[in-house]
Image (cartoon, rainbow, N blue to C red; front, top):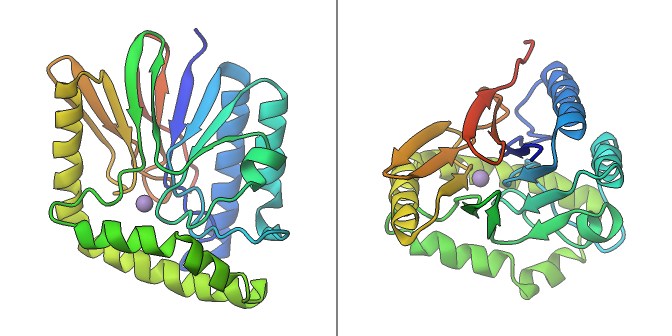
Length: 245
Ligand SMILES: [Mn+2]
């Protein structure tokens, strides 16, 4: 089979990044997507594609037009794309599924790919003893909060979002150690349950770990690591994209 590609934690539009660096990341990501379109059978985005995504009913941010076009183009050319919401992809509405043709998941998925049992999730909320976060996430993504945000003008909404995303990053960083541990333990348990490959992102730390016959892959990020996963039907690998700084 033609390989399946995995990528996560690109955090497009992160307010702390220099515009020149963003431009380079854009070029790199487009090149990566060209490669996937040419060689791959599928692309799976394992969360946090954007540093912040909130979808209004009739408005999407224009800064990422290049990406919408490329995603739609890939799907049109026969490379299906899966998109799992990360904790920064705050609210994915129907835009990606209805207008761009992506398969969108709020919580990840498990699926047999090329004869292997895959579990693919973003990985947030797996810090040990982190039920507070999981509760907060439910509330923040719930109908009440969404119906309140609706009344904020998008220009103001997106500025607030940048602030919020910075806070969320501070939170994630402070939780990093616990979360990393929790994720590893979670992956190990899932392998014991019978999964062959567990794929996550979220903590920005690339990892390739074997537990008996199973594998845990953390995809790292596209902020400093520029790592991605590739599965050719037989072997799962974690590779580095050549990024020109
Ligand atoms: Mn994340």
